[in-house]
Amino acid sequence: MDHVIIEQLKKEIERFSGETLPESVGRVVRSGDGVAEIEGMRGARMMEMISFDRAATSGKPLPDALLDTAPVYGIVLNLEEENIKAIVLGDSSAVAEGMLVKSTGKLLSLPVSDDIVGRIVNPLGSPLDGKGEIKNPVFVPIERDAYGVIDRAPVNVPLHTGIKAIDAMIPIGRGQRELIIGDRFTGKTTLAIDTILNQLSEPEESRPICIYVSIGQKEAKTAHIAQLLSDRGAMEYSIIVSASAAAPASIQFLAPFAGAAIGEYFMEQGKDVLVIYDDLSKHAVAYREISLLLRRPPGREAYPGDIFYLHSRLLERSAKLSKEKGGGSLTALPIIETQEGDVSAYIPTNVISITDGQIFLDTDLYNKGMKPAINVGLSVSRVGSAAQTKAMKGVAGTMRLELAQFRELEAFMQFAQDLDEGTKKRISSGRRLSEVLKQDKHKPIPFERQAIMIFAATHALFSGVSVPRMKEAEEKFFGFIDANAAHILKDVRESRAITKETETALKGAIGEFLDAHPELLAPNA
Image (cartoon, rainbow, N blue to C red; front, side, top):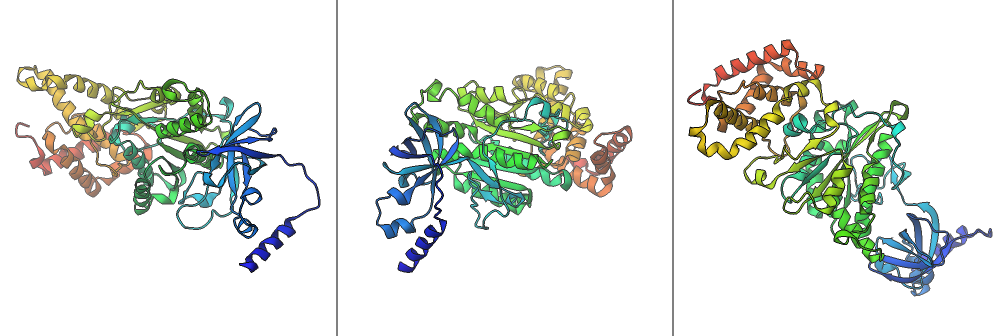
């Protein structure tokens, strides 16, 4: 013990300099619930990092104080007339009244490098996966101004999710902000994770780096996601930023900004990045807790008045950069949890107004077995269609209308015997289309397979197949294509379009397939 103390004293003496430098110093006057009120630091800035000097005022015996060298940091969030208020990062019990506080002169930053890909880190950049420190890091600010209009380019490159309903009707482009919204247990996180998994089917040179930001989630859930991505080989291009439900509100508050900062690091290298914020409802709750502790005036639903600015300055950092800026992109998929499907609540309406569209997951559809439970009527992509491939745009043009008409006619299906032939045909087509859009979780489908299946569905090429056996027919059809007509998939994948020649070959292949599998046909077909 004496040896350790002596070594520590030697290090302190070595660091000692006779040069006198000005230093902004304050003192904690009140502390509690992760918030410290500090007097004396008149030069402090918003979001500046400050250091609490534990050894100087810990009240511990000198040997114990010298051994307890772990720094405690905070972030300045309130600038008041007399004092400042800061949130404590980490163990707030280590901060006590009378403790000295020093300015670092730095805004909050986190270490990032190419080595962070494949890692699990907390919002401060500290590894959580036991694989050692991040190698060769550069420090990037957690908060920064978003790129201006001049530095941006139009969104014109698709980000394929592997989910037929989304890629066909609610397409997402690289650089877009698309909200995923719905009640609990409707498959919001599943959509996001499937999007990450689907990037395996993308060429390695154009494959986006995927960042999953877990905010206020159970650690078991985050661990399950990490294991799933690892088992599928997706962690090779993924990063997980975890701020669990047990983490302080300050850490949960920083999590999405940390994810955006990591994404910008790669975007500025000319790479494509996908960031998933799961979820911003819990982020808003964490910020409300911090704001109330800072004694900021509450507004609607007790949220502070700047809650809209909080999420807008986060999501505005998503962009497709111009060629002059490297041509990289940052795509954001924020997740919002609703209560009883109420999209008109405060936080949902805020985020809907900030994003470029939303994917609404309906509880009723989920309970009916329609998975993914996407409500096509309430879902929209405001810029994604500009990035949609020619093949998908061509096959999915009438799909949304057909599906909407089918949903309207569903109420009359119990009276099917009294309907005219045209209505019966439309209902039958809608049923098959709904079956085609059903998809098992964690089984994303590459773009070219989606295109040919949706082409077949919208052109009634499977009209003779029994509705309950549509799923079986789809699986067997892809097996048939792989074995006998793989060139069709190759042509669609390379040309990004369904040419006349491909269309003819596809119709012929479907005819051969149905001839080979008469058991799939309906009795009256």
